[in-house]
Image 1 (cartoon, rainbow, N blue to C red):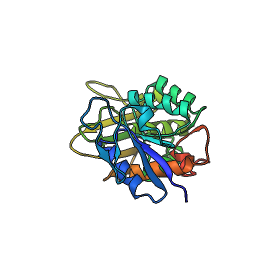
Image 2 (tube, rainbow, N blue to C red; image 1 turned 180 degrees about the horizontal axis):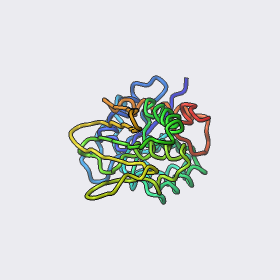
Image 3 (cartoon, one colour; image 1 turned 90 degrees about the vertical axis):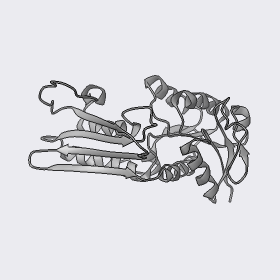
Image 4 (cartoon, one colour; image 1 turned 30 degrees about the vertical axis):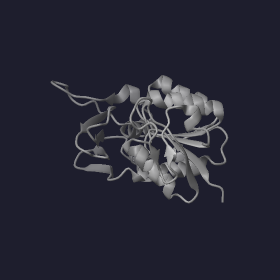
Length: 264
């Protein structure tokens, strides 16, 4: 059985180390490269069972790779994106915080190589997204919708990419545009709640991996749909599942709903 040759971006970070371990543990995968930021102490360090060294040079770090898993920052991912598109390396993107231009660049690169792009690769989160789509259609009238998310103190973007994806799924199910109906903060005299809005609340603290709750608040009842992560291992497992999904894809832009066959 041939093994998937996988490189990991940000291999010295919390998520990167988890991804390296997941690749090493998978019988159908081998670590083929590791990327890090130039000038950091991680450059040159060995990672994984194969002793691959972390490299800042893309040509060196990706020389033997067929796939790159990237959970870093938008600016770094976009640099990796251009290289992967040019050299036909398949890309699994879990990075969050992209602006519209960044998302457009990912879509354009997918015309040259296969890309799986999702703000959260947990199987549980993506099943939750499907549940939210079904729930939103049932609670379209008479229910106020609020999305509450909590993450560790080191997370730099808010709301989380997963929370925004939840909002997009709900808004689409209701025939709304999230850009027009989202409310990201409340302070002072805000007036009565507009029933057409979708509210977001953000919590940052400690070492919370990622908690997300969507509240449908009606008259006389509240429905809460929640997902709580206790380990980043579920993200790594999902990323490897995405690699397997892309194995027979040459180009195209996909998400975890495609990987899990959850689309209608």
